[in-house]
Image (cartoon, rainbow, N blue to C red; front, side, top):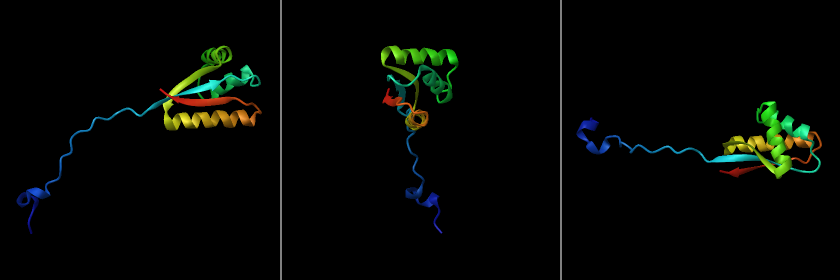
Length: 104
């Protein structure tokens, strides 16, 4: 039997070390509407985005005053999940709250 030492062409290839890159990040954004209550937006921010009450109120006021506000920055899968959770919660409570994700 011929071993690898006798067949240099059978030696395992040593691959060059590849640089690992960070996955793309996405902002999750809430959008203002004329129907969703401020209290519900704060509730969503605390429940889905795990914000303390003070930060949740600040983000809610940004949404109210500016038309939208960033809730956080996440990988694509996490951002998609959070957008879906917001839409599900809003629909369940009868609100048209819109949430989207934007690549950073």
